[in-house]
Length: 77
Image (cartoon, rainbow, N blue to C red; front, top):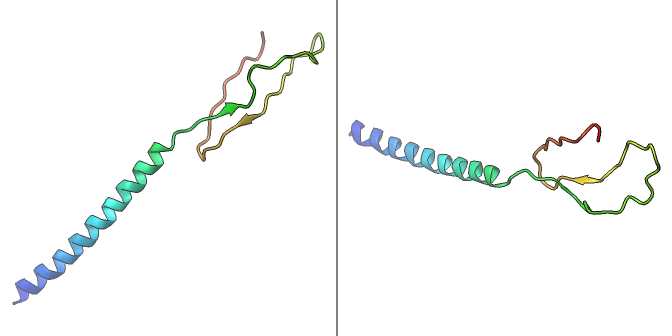
């Protein structure tokens, strides 16, 4: 009798554990499927307003995801 009661409680424990682990696996898959990405709105633009000797060109960079993105650029041409 005690063995049957113990088995019933273990059954519910492992059932709840399986549901929790399946939920964590789904959430982990969701986090990994959302890849990081950044983009420049208009990368092909005319630099007509650039003066001679000017070294700084500013482009707006958008990151629609929640992941940080490393941006590597040239420091000189």
